[in-house]
Image (cartoon, rainbow over all chains, first blue to last red; front, side, top):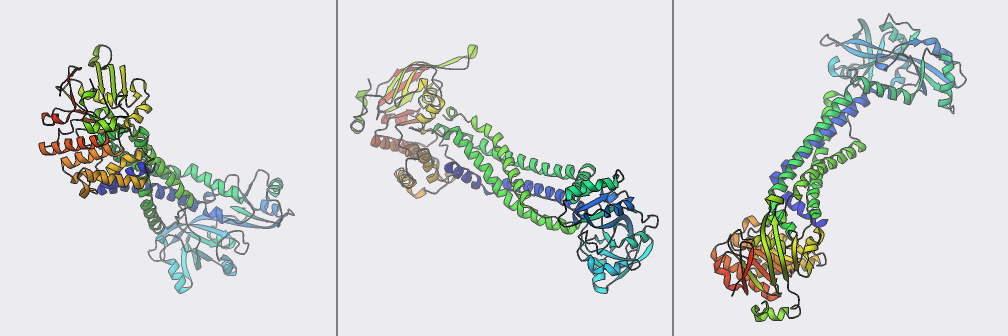
Length: 384
Length: 245
């Protein structure tokens, strides 16, 4: 085996230009696969980021709600009814809506997601929002998501330098009192957070009695599953009670079914795989074809078919390694570029790194398998 | 018919193995193709080569010399007749057994067929990969000795592209001899060389073969090298005409 590997190594490295081209093909393939799968995962992660930020034990949503970005409302009284259960420690309502924030610099309006939550309830992980509990209950006070897109203007910097900024949201003058970093997604370009009272002021046609999501904190030690079942009797068919995990899972299902994320980026990754496959196949095939007399000679000298197959397979494995490492580094760079450009977080995971490495090996291995058929045609009797 | 031709060095080298000839063909027929398209190439070949003998195989092109050589070299399967090479019955050997037999034979081709991406040293050393019983240290020592003995001690780490035709063929000879073959088969080893290099290559082969008592069967058209033969076998139209030296 070592011998076949040695021969493979010498054969590949003999012509440096050819090796560079072959490795470049694999690099492109690896990079494409990593980036496409990374963006797919990133888009998915960012889209369910709001759902993941829920820290309540159970949530209530309308049975008509498919995603929290386009939620239907349910009657608030159901939430109060649930609050009467001895296992429930606290309840909190949450309003969500899509509004329009006017960029104070260029006077253009851009869509923005608005959240009305009780800042002191501690049922949503919005870093630092507790500090503004009192201020947010004051008239028309909002918090700005520091990770919003730049459409809205340099609001974050302005807030950091000047403390507050008056802007127009839904044709109403409001004051942004600070920014917290939460994060945006493919569904939304920016977020604003405030108390339920201020939320309702921005949406005059929304009634306080219909909420988008009910957040439930259970008594310590309560069995979430059992309580979830017992609470169902309070809401009947008018609302659904979900655990945190079920909420996230439902969001993922919604995005899978409604946004072509999987398809688009899965396709991109598949194209990368295909490019790599074709390049490696071409290289290995021409290597075998060009050296057919030499391979036949080796067969005549007593080297077995198996040995020559090992040589070709070793070449494919070497190419996989030579292509993967630079491809990986390049993909890391592209993640950073994408994170900056799209303003969504893209990061490498160990699973993805291993998965794409496995794909690379399979890609090169498959190419070798097909190129190998040519080796069998090397007839030692033909060299005389 | 076989024994008269040995010279004295070969005689001593082979005295123990005299009884079994290195090659023994009995009534070998060979044809390409099937059915109506069948074309018979070899007719009733009977031939023996004793250990230590240098036998030249001559004849016009198309007379079946090369086909016979590929049969003896275990590169093609014998379908009709009996062919014993180095004690193996090739006529009823499996492909795996044929591959085993090939490892005991040193091949020298018209084209050197060196691997272009390996240096002269690596090309020769590759043969030892087939013989794991030789330690890596011995293998590299033997490789250097062999290449030195063919006059390439100063070209050990040259790639074939930087060697002349004669030098490449000498590397090929070193490679053929590397694994201590019990038989050398050569197909017009001088055809691609000028007369001086051709002569050198043949002398080298003769010298090395005599020293080891290794029989050589060489196909050649080259009249300049007929003198190295112990025996010349003439082939015509697929039949053997035993010649005189």
